[in-house]
Image 1 (spheres, rainbow, N blue to C red):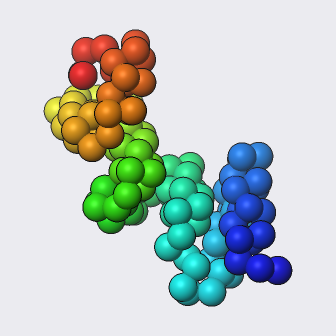
Image 2 (image 1 turned 180 degrees about the horizontal axis):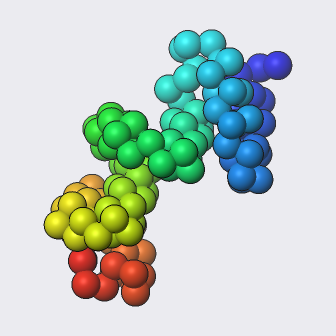
Length: 122
């Protein structure tokens, strides 16, 4: 199966909440295709679903240096980190993640400002 078809398959698994299957497909990609935008998006979704916050943060730090699509993906990851921090009642970290997300992507700024969950943090 061509790498792009595998990435689409992994995205389908992730959309269905089948994150272990999505992860296995991404890991089966040739190494030169594992960092494509679609693969990174699936990897981020998997890390978030597995609550692997250190991995989310590491991937976000790579994504934030890329193109606008990668920056939006990084900001989405930061928004998830903020939510996880808020759930653990670590509001200082949550606020920091929100501020980082808003500085990276203007698109996420609007979404965060309209989200009542983040009204006290933004």
